[in-house]
Image 1 (cartoon, one colour):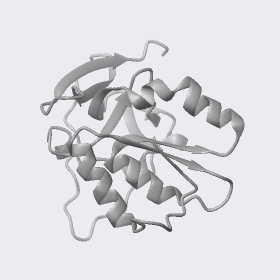
Image 2: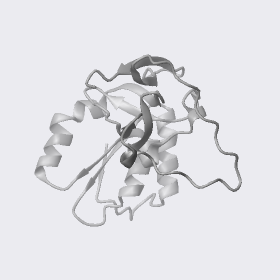
Image 3: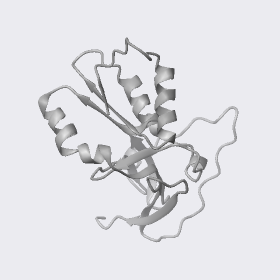
Image 4: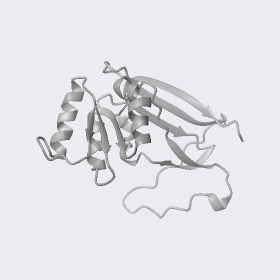
Length: 199
């Protein structure tokens, strides 16, 4: 666990060097969680990079309540990894969803082909931790005023072919989760069809 105000001014101080050091140690099974402290310039992006490459967690502590949450309520999850390189992939059923967007996680998006690639690093989940991915969706057949506006013709690419007609399965989406055991190198796939029973 690294606790810092984000001002690295002694020893290894460069972002690239620190990221490389965290990455090298993660390959040996030593994970690094980073906690930034203070109210001012805590160098958020650098601390997040270090914890990401160190297969750990990142938190920011700016008050006593946040310190209690991180070091009393959630510390076990920070110290005990139950799944590593966890990847989540969502496929929406076009007969149920006309458009969607992920809210947050902009710096964590993987290319579709990286989901099955066990060499691609992803996030770690600690004991008792949860992950929430929030999507805004527009249901298929929604009023035209909420439909997605038309897209200009592409100049350098062909227009994507329309999605194949999906079966009316009632499924809203399929959730796929891929993860490795903490000491493993091969991922396991879980797949769950999700329905919206609240229509």
